[in-house]
Image (cartoon, rainbow, N blue to C red):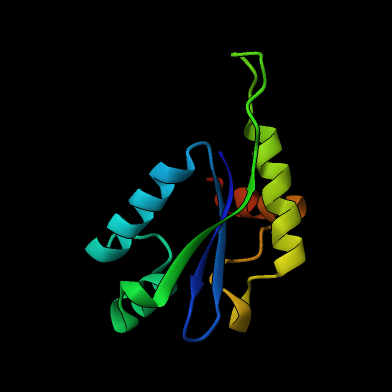
Length: 116
């Protein structure tokens, strides 16, 4: 488990994500991109246009499992992903990620979508 990156070798754009199972997420991402079913349509479009060999998958940071089998790694993954997003800034011309919404932005969205 840990933080991963997908790098476009042509334009150097990156996608940063996290997963409880890195080998599985790499498999799933490759399958979704090839099948046209990936949530990030910009990444998917570049994958289709350039082809799989123009992308590389990389582990940025792994989390070492703890002795406690009941430990919940969700907060650790979220924290590390936020750190890597802040460090690499994979937005706009530099990447495929969308900036995360602030708490206030999320609350405004919820309020705007509530029925009157």
